[in-house]
Amino acid sequence: MLKHLSIKNYALIHHLDMDLYKGFSVITGETGAGKSILLGALGLVLGNRADTSILLDKSKKCIVESHFNIHGYKLESFFTDHELDYDELTILRREISSQGKSRGFINDTPVKLNILKELGDMLVNIHSQRQTVTLNDSNFQLAVIDNYTGIQQDILNYRTLFLDYSQKLRQYNELLEKEEKSRSDQDYLQFQLEELEKAKLKENEQGDIEKELEILQHAEEIKTTLFTSIQALLNDEQNLLNQLSDIQMKLGKLADVHAGIKALQQRLQSAIIEIDDIAHELDRIDQGIQLDPGRIEDLNTRLDLIYQLQHKHRLQTVKELISLMHSVRDQINVIGSLGEKIQELEKEIESTRSRVSEEALRISNLRQNAIPEIEKEILAIIDGLGMSGANIKIEHHQLEDFSKDGIDRVTFRFNANKGRELKEIAKIASGGELSRLMLAIKSLISSRNLLPTIIFDEIDAGVSGDIAGKAGKILKGMSGQMQVIVITHLPQIAGKADYHYMAYKDILDEQTVSNIRKLNVDGRVEEIAKMLSDEKVTSAAVDTARELLGTVKK
Image (cartoon, rainbow, N blue to C red):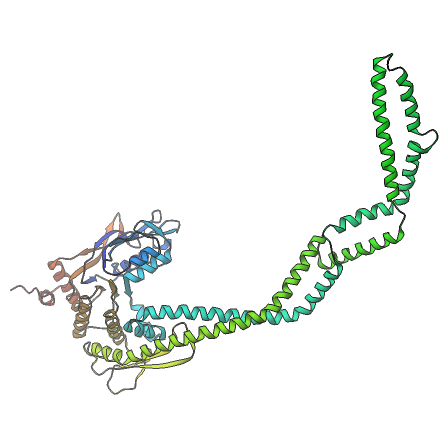
């Protein structure tokens, strides 16, 4: 349950600290005093979105902190799943900076907004006047039945199955579409593959061909140059090697005479050996070069094929063409395997659909079996709220196909007047009747699903007099099972509360701010007497207030 609420710099609230207690609490105050602002601030720590427009002082951040006693509500697994420290006194905090940045904390550990909201939904249920219109919403009506029957976990399990089924169906349709498109592309892909395979490409061949062509195209010039060079070095009568050998021999005769000549004679000997090697290497190259016009034509034809393929596929290298060939081959293989995948997926879909159908039918039966009891209990509660002639009927229909909620659609039909035609709630119920009906439904489902705290923001709209007192009794009864907090304008409801808080406006630094205080018995008498009076509080109003509170002074 909610034990403490601290609010700083939110809307009209400068700084507010509020202790709350087990049982039934009411919050009253003049219109605009800030009662609903409290709910807005509490909504922040429960994960609602916010922006800088909520800041009272735009230069400072807003901080809202709430303390909850969560003993006995089996929330340990939530903390374990999200790697949070569990504490029976759990603190939720939300900070909104002046730049609009938001941070959430659970027991001082930073968490994402969705985690804060997930825990908040397990701690507090807030009902505002706007929610009354959801009475006619089919999803809300189905949720009422699910809450009453306590099958929320069954619904979650079913939705996991349904999501799996939906994903398989989507994947199946995508595969069918892909197969259809691929079939139309297959002939073209097969042509591409055959053309590339026929080319028998080798990764480095383009460079090798271009180098060989360069040599062949200059073969005559190369051989002429090599021939004259070899002749000059080796073959002519006065070739360079013979002349150098003659010089080396003459220097050798003087080697013993002059040490410097001996060294040069040795160097010349090394040069003769090197030049001889060069001459023979030139000859080897000459022998390897042939004048071959046919070979040139073959290489040009091969190179033209490579260039054509590169241009056609907008690629730069043979390596890229080979990679393309492998890719096209893979695409063709995928097309061939799509049929097998589709058949496998069809079997999976059929199996999953069977499980979804089985679970949906089981949930549908639970819902149908609960409907008579729900109708009976709602009628009993609204009878106690002054609508003894009212009647309600929950129509149930099974859908032809599955949805995330199963195969059921329900419609609440209602009439507050005995013997009149039952119609959809929005078409027949007045504001006060809607409020009483919603209170009956909330009372019904809260008795089955014990949240720590439920908060009503003016659930008493359109209700007054004796009916207000009866509504107060129902709220009081609910508070025996959970913490109930009600924002109200009705003294009859305020008088039933265990604790009474009053919202009021004050002036701080020449600025209007909202605040709240817990009233003692005398304060409650005075506040309820004001609620009973017009402009001036009368002694009769004070006596009535005391009577409502059971504190009549004798």
